[in-house]
Each structure stands twice: as C-alpha cells, then as structure tokens.
Image 1 (cartoon, one colour):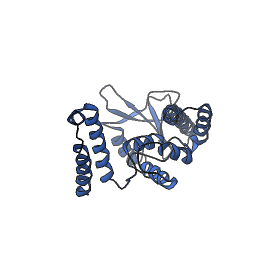
Image 2 (image 1 turned 30 degrees about the horizontal axis):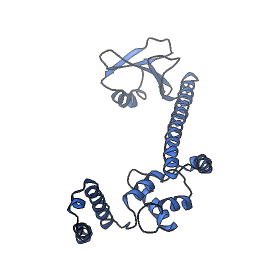
Image 3 (image 1 turned 45 degrees about the vertical axis):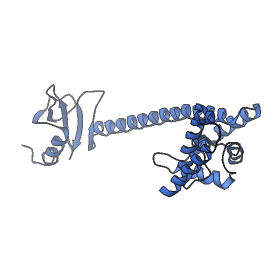
Amino acid sequence: MNSDRQYAVASLLFDYVKSPSLRHLRDPHSVHKLARDIVNAVDRAGSVWGKWEAEREEVAKAAAPCWIPTEDLLASLNNLPGPQLTKTDVEQRLRAIWEEPYASYPNEDLRDGCLALYLAEKAQGTEMRAIIGMLQEHLEREDDRLRREQEERYRKLKEEERAKLEQRFLSGADCGWTPVGGSGALYCRRNGRSFRIVQGKDRRWSLYRIRSIDDKGDLLGLYQGRGDANKALKTIAYANEG
C-alpha cells in the first residue's frame, strides 16, 4: 500500500517537472493544482475505491442520506473528474458510506418527501449540488421535527404511566413510588402497607409508614439515597407490625 502511494506521487512529480517553463513550475495556481492532485492520488492509492476523486467523494457523502435516484446521481458524478462510474459503483459506494461508523442508512419515512422535493427542483433545472444542499437542509428540519415528536410521545407515555401508577396507589393496590396529586413526596404500597418518602434540605430521604394520604406517619428511618430506602423497605414491608 505504501509503495502504491509513493508511485502515485512520484508519477505526478515527474510529470510536473517535465515542464520546460520555470514560470509554470513556480506558478501558485500550478503548485496548488499539483498539491490537490497529489492528495487525490494518495487517497485513491490508499483506498479500495479507486474511481473516487475528492470531488466525487464529497458529493456522494453529501447525497448519501438524501434519497436521490441512483441513475441521476450517477450521471452527475460522471460529470466530475475521474474514471467512468457504473450504477453498481455508486450503489456500493453509498452502501459503504451508510455502514461507516456513526453513519446510518437513510430514513425510510423521509423517502417520499425527499423524492418529491428532488423531482420538483430537477424540473426547474436546479443543478445537482444545489439540490443536495437543499435536501440536507430539509432533512435537518425533518430530523428536528421527528425528534420533537418522539420526545412528545415519550413525555405522554411517561405521564400515562405515572397516572396509572398513582391510580393504583389510590385504589389500594401494591405499586412502586409515585407522586400523588402533584405532591413533592412519593408514595408506594408494599404488602398492602402504605409508605411515604420525602427528601429533606440535607438531601437525605425520610421514610414513613402511613395509614392514609393525610396521615403524618411514623418515621422509619433516614437514608442517603432512595436506593438505600428501597433496600430497607424490602424487609420493613414484611416485618411484623406492633
């Protein structure tokens, strides 16, 4: 692999110094072009994707999540520098991009929306790179919308679970800790016995045995954390009461 990169760079340098013009050799534009060609050659020599110049790679990675029809993307990529690509070249390069670490396959739920936007822009004559940029912005907005919807569904689910848990306590059934009526304290029932736990200003938890919601209750102990109180409750809830 190192010999491949060395050969690629050497070939470019030999071609460059063949120029009879000293002015050409020192020209900043020519030097920058040589540097870009060297970088591309090294990338190709060090990669299994030999047809993918830097520009193609950039476009493919930008287009990967956008649901652009493969045939159209292929035609656009073949207008960029590099050997002729086939449909399989593009399909497999996209798959490799999707399977890279921290990447993912395009969101199937957003496919129709992306395709509709793409076709509308294509009909207007918008060039591919601009369409890709527009679709990236669209996907950012959609991802944000989906995230907010997911958070709202999760919030509603947790609220429904909390309401069911509170109702279980109020109905006299055994249940885990739950606030009741928006209280700061938490209530639970184990073995048919009701308990309340409250965190004080010192951040310790006070555990009480209660007979009703309004009952001040009997203090059973002070605990550094709720986990400690829960461990104690496993015994207390089944101990004989005097």
